[in-house]
Length: 260
Image 1 (cartoon, rainbow, N blue to C red):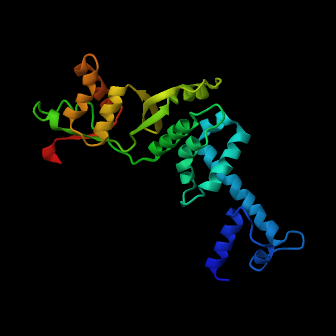
Image 2: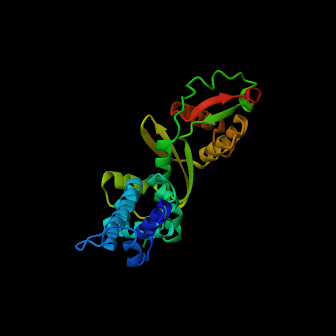
Image 3: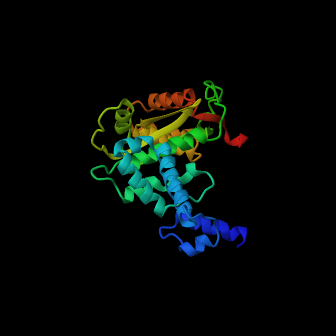
């Protein structure tokens, strides 16, 4: 057999629900009387399956805490059978787990897909490219006529999640070692960002979520600030939100249309 054929057979032995016929394995891989080739390959297959479960547990520790070891391992195996690893980095294995959980919600916990989405995006934020924050005076340097048409460049680590359940009460309980609260249904938006080496998230009010959505889409500051028009004291709300974005390092740059 060629190297490519050997590798393909090895991969089949590790990942297939129906192991290759023993004769095919014995013709390619060495075995002994005490440990024939199919049994040797079965050891690797078991290790590979366990490694996928461990990789998913590392990415979704809070989800694993909710489900417990046995239920999480069963979920991980079911998920990996439908979404096998397709990337050289095993940390990418869980990319479709939030959607998988929304299609197969856990008993009594329709919010698990949203919890998984939060954990996945927290990992994405941690590995996002670094960016230098624009600084607290970035907006103050804008001339009054330039402010409405200026645009924000957000740091790559900034994420905005739109969810069907609020995962933040569940997250806080799990972090504190407290019993998981009941699911919190209702659409909500959660911002995720990185502060140094620490990933942070927070639920946003509707107006601020819309403003951040507009900023991420490249809208002007005038259009971003219009998102606060629905509430009381819109100017104060816009000022407070933009100030917090800059202070938290969400803004990597501020530019006008002329500088684009």
